[in-house]
Image (cartoon, rainbow, N blue to C red):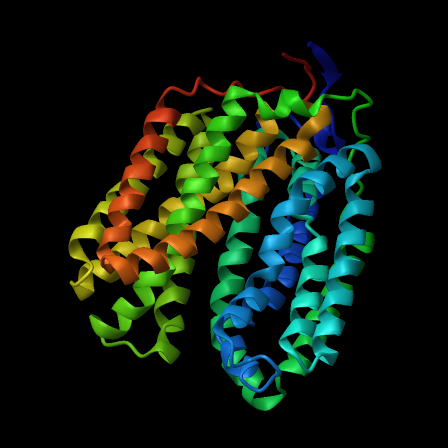
Length: 413
């Protein structure tokens, strides 16, 4: 099936060799802020939820506690594709607004709940707002391809900083205002995100009128490579966070409450360190080479964790290397998905991508816990090394990604 569409957007008035336009910066920064507001409300639960759950009806059941915390991601995994496809047909902003409304409603239900079952219901409703694909597609719609990876890097950076910030403020908020108030703050953050989308984020160009069969997205070989890649990346991330926090306590003698002192500088410095590679790769159309180097770095890091987990200096250095690779891949992969996907099915393609991301998170956490219990902590990095090696081989055979001109007609097969 051949699709032809004019690839245009509001920033076409600038020459392709110039920097990001004001509209591109405004769109990318505002959508990164929406992502950050949403993720902050989710991240601040992680350090303190297990403690709060003990006070609730059913909180003495570890299985229910885990299900309540993971319900959001589980529901998200089922709704990323439908909402991504809906954004292709109904428009990005309406889908994002609807998703944020569900996020707010779910947060308020959690704030009023006195049992774990009520929390699970609220978190499940929040998960119905699976809008990551729609937000990423809107970024793709609003930026030229030569600047898209930088725009995605803004989102990745905002998420990384938000994670570190949540580790710092969550215990303080829990002790001062309590968990119900934290859920209310989460709802307020959702309302602010809707306001940013309506009044700050520029409108994107009209969506293509063509319709692309979903099977075309599922069977695209290049998209399958990227979907496998995001699965492995987040599998490795979650498996690492099952093992590394305990190693920081045991090996580096850093108490759990002080781990943010490691994560925050490592994330910030690694984000800055990966920017030159992104800029050079975009400028000289060498993103495949940057992509492969990042995967190879991830492989070396996994091997390093496998062999050197008990060495404190190596542990910190490997964390730094991990986040350089992770931030680079988090920025480049969605950009590549948006380039390869048929323009009329970007939302659907990113929905599949985000679904595999969620499955990677879930299975990585489960595998990390299981292998740590049955074998040893380092053993999980042996598995991650094998998966990353397979990913590197698959990615090596990926063809060069041609950069579309902002004005040219695109032919998609």
